Image 1 (cartoon, rainbow, N blue to C red):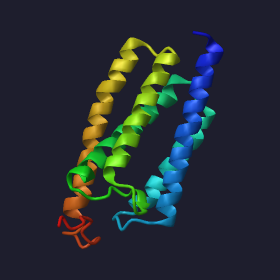
Image 2: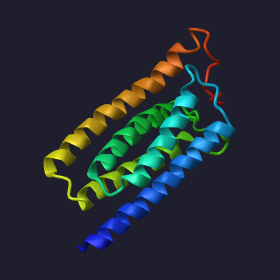
Image 3: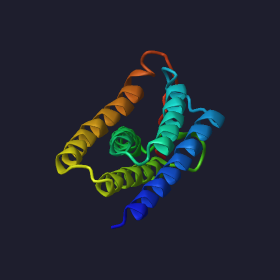
Length: 166
């Protein structure tokens, strides 16, 4: 394929994901979710920083590796909340964004990241190592969701986050 075409794919992917990250950050800011440890402020900062770095370095394989690992953490976190039948808070307390939608968006970001790693000629070993690490990061995201769910109410840090299952 032509290099110009691959650079356009990388640019358009970066713009699309950056818009998603910025929307998520603003939703968290406008509709804060009652989560402990100031996780909302950290998530907003990470979203905005990731969007900025992605737009600047979209032609480099390394940024797509980092983005796929970050999205893998989000994937595990969203999956935990999906199993709890509760919103994950990935878009703050904004109504209408269930954990299943966030899970699909996370999978899309991971797929776009891996596609860009291939298009930008990331080595096979690098791609396989990234996929393995992404699995570990997804497990850590799941653990983060479970830690917030199980420990924060017991420590008196927040109200239980699960909606009724009626």
